[in-house]
Image 1 (cartoon, rainbow, N blue to C red):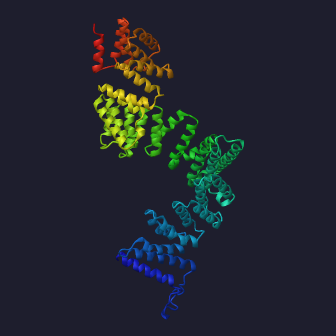
Image 2: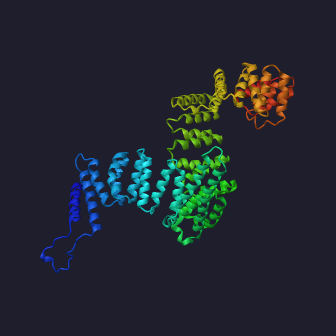
Image 3: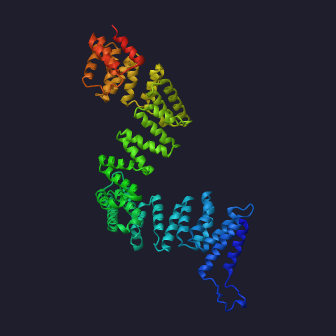
Amino acid sequence: MPSRHKSILLVLILAIVASAGEWPFDDANEGAGLVTDLRLSASSATEAAAWAEYAKGLYVLGGDGATFADAAPHFSRALLYLPDSPYLLRALIGPRLVAKDWLACMADLAPVVAAHPGAVMPNLIYADLLEETGKRDEAIAHLQRTLTTTAWSDARVVKELAQKLWAAKQGKAAAELYVQALRHESLRDDVSFVCAAAATWYAYADVVLASETEPGWGLRRRAAAWRKRARRQAVALAKRQEAVPAASAASGLDERLMVGSLLADVGEWERLGDYIDRLGQEMSSGTSRFAWADLRLRLLRQREDLAGMRSLYGQLLADMLIPRPLLFAAGEFYLEHDQLAEAIEAFERLQGMEPDNIGLRLQLAHIYLQANDPQRGMALLAPVSVLPPRGLLLRAYLWRKQGDQERAYADMKKAGEAAQTRKDDDFFDTGYYFTLAMICETTGRIDEAIELCRIAYKREPENPACANFLGYLLADHNRELAYARELIDQALAKEPDSIAYLDSRAWVYYRQGLFHDAMLVMADLLQRGVEQEDSDGVIADHAGDIFAANGYARLAAFYWGLALDKNTGDAAGKIRAKMAP
């Protein structure tokens, strides 16, 4: 049967049923054992009328050129009969909400909420629509009337009203609303509701303290009272959950987790430890195990128990069903604590889950860079046709790590141009200028390198790294040596024990022809142990030049030899040339 014919038939059937007081039977049916009194009860008649209006709405929608606005009055009348029907409510407001037509949606709902001030869902949605159209005060007033009409019997109304009061900067009213609500026994039995109350009280304590720059004794006392109330409620909830027999608690896993999270939120860490110990055996397996593990991680983090966190993250990684948020948290933890192999494992699994997630791809490529594995980083970025500015910057670092300075330079320039197009001023930090300057120097673009250092120094004149880098670059290329020395002295004034800055001072003295002064600085520097700071052999090479200038040929050869061990290619060739007799 075509759908339109079905709709017509449905309309006819429901209309007949809705209007029937009784069904007429002929005399032949008398005594045949059939029920002849088919009069509908009041509730049945109401329901039939509702679905008849709904069917009419569907019939209208099936007409040529019909719009939802043509059918909406029928759906609205249907909801007038059955205001608590979620199905009819969705039918009425769903298309309006999708189209974000708030005013039309309010007009459709207005007769329903006027006729049924105690119907919870229509009134909640109507209040949301009032707020969405900039009428927050009216939304609050509407919910207050709904709360009175429903006699505080529905937790949803209280929670929604509290949220709107909080959003309106009426924290005290929201907190006191929960105090009043919990005088009603039916609401005290709702664990989710009580958790929301305690969380609001604890948050309101922060609002009280933030109301003044230097809160006095009275404000601190008020805040402490709200926090005490919240903690007392959290502890009471925990005791209630612990008292529930394991066999009866299977359906309350979410509530147990909610209470545990509340204990953490209000700072009841010791009580949370007891809570986890008592319920751990029941909660550490099955569907709740990951949420429970997340709660345990919060406690371990508070206790600064890194060993415990490592152990738990290790157990979680061994579970192939670990959810994405925990897997990401594990990767971040391992990164923070320089466990690159474990971080790579976590982020490789994440990237496998979301191969099209560019952010994850970039983060994993950056970890490969940290792990000195630029080839894998390049392979990961290769399929991406258009990289964002920070992706181009990352690829430049990878090229640089592989020794391809020209490609690194090209990507750095592209990254800068893309960031300028996007007006991303935060992109141009000191690190960007420093890295590009080093690449420019390596590729022979000395003037550009110096100009980049000048920009960095101008942006952060108080940053000793900026002053030292510009000073060293000028000294290394025999430019403005007096100014270079001034810059290096400025850096050392702030960080007098910096090995890098002391090397710069020795080098600028050397460039100025102050060979003895340079040797004194270098000798003092070498006594400090510079092996870790001299991974590229620059300090050893400088030491060789300085000792040679002072006539200490054997010392010079020794330090050039150290520098040679850390260099290859042209750099190694230049050192060998200095060592030749």
